[in-house]
Length: 430
Image 1 (cartoon, rainbow, N blue to C red):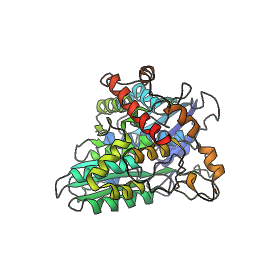
Image 2 (cartoon, one colour):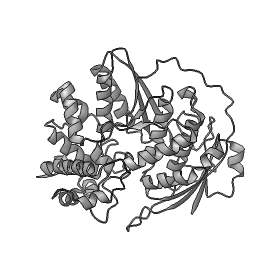
Image 3 (cartoon, rainbow, N blue to C red):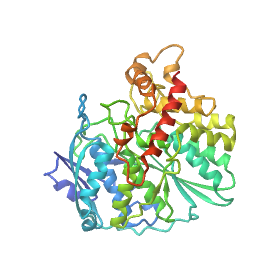
Image 4 (cartoon, rainbow, N blue to C red):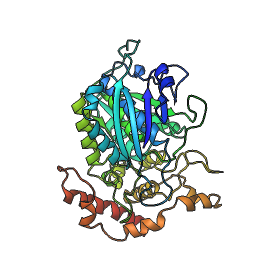
């Protein structure tokens, strides 16, 4: 068991000798975190206290996740015991549902979590109302193809004069340019609406408060929890659902093989995870309405919708400007930040989706480099052989029965969706 404290008070951080790691989030330069967002979310305007709390909790989870190394080999590589103490505005409300929250976060990351909540100090600053129109919709914009497709389709569906709020988070600096570029492209495609882009850089630093180095775990299954928390904090102002565009095939996270937990790195938009998270947030009084408008679609079907709206040529330009690579922030000699490997699960599904939608894929993949300069890197990251096996035949009902679907998600719908996704992959790989 590794114990962590997230506090917003410097004195508390200095006296917290019983914890393995201490994270301090303050407005001052003495903080464990990069970026300009403070622990009271002042730049978001007035935010419901429970949603401020949820951002702190999500940040603590993300920080702890990145501070304990996973096992490099074996089926239990992801099995860690993590104990978090987080300062919140209403400890009793959160503590009453700590076990449910731990189960939900565990489903997301594959770890064992426990939570203790203590009283946070109040903000000395009164948050001012933002001089912005109330958004008609709030959409997460990660820089990936799914979120970009969802943001564009939402923008095109709104009435003239409406306001669309796009919420982005980045910890890897290579992602920020993708997000900003997509906002410009959406503005051009939907000039009759107003866009608000709320982009946040919030990340644990490499150094502890005493100047020593944190341990660093490169995987970050919990990053999406922080992204959701920031999105909900922004969406609560209008009371509208937070829209998280993700193709349903990826959200179901089908396993590549019997020994694999799932094809993707997280259960970020898995129907069970979203249902459990919304239930916990509702119980503590936070704004927690989350919707995935594309839960019933494959990525190829999402791409086809974009082409129907703006034409295949423009869809090619727009979707090719996104990044779906699982290794975008990888450090490798000669590989530029933000590059797409072309051979990870995210890249292969992306390439299959362009193919399925009959859209030209103008993405520059390292695997297609004519000079073969990145052969070692590509070889390290490739799951092409595993993907051939995965896509060789249609998924069987027994695979769906292992997916931990919520009660209101019909298994036959999940099976149909998974088969459609696999067929897109098979057609591309053939």
